[in-house]
Image (cartoon, rainbow, N blue to C red; front, side, top):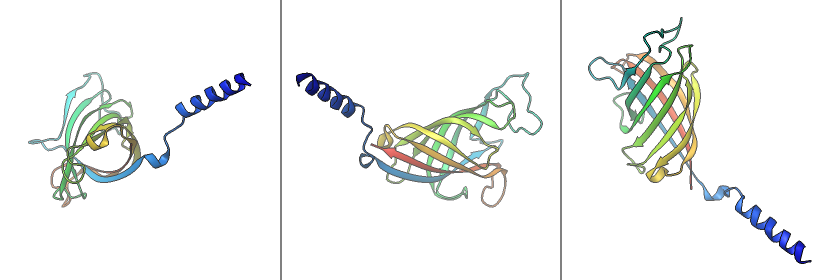
Length: 182
């Protein structure tokens, strides 16, 4: 009888220690913004910092294989570059696909306005930007987003665009981010 009780107690403790977090203990936050990656000559937000002289852009690729860029991009409420600035994104990307369309991206998105001002979250993964829609995982954060997990759904609004929405040559990417917070 004592052995059964002991085994049952050990089993219950094991199950309790390995139980997943109850979904009710997590808060879900959704954030949408537009990233503006400008390529202007005078004030670019993305800069090439390393490249292999032997690597060349492939037939239809935009970025030469092995190129490394760092960026400090503006985040806005709407696609227009004149819309309200809500944050900035800093990070780097490396062209890891020989196709010229696949980067490995590390991005820290800091909110500079609104209820999450001063907080940021980090995404890191492969980003095949030739796809109109793609997903990056959230791997952490700071401030209100400390220990965040989740995902960002990215949609290309335009690449190398110059129009009334974006008078500086550059890219506009829509981010719809879902964060799970403890």
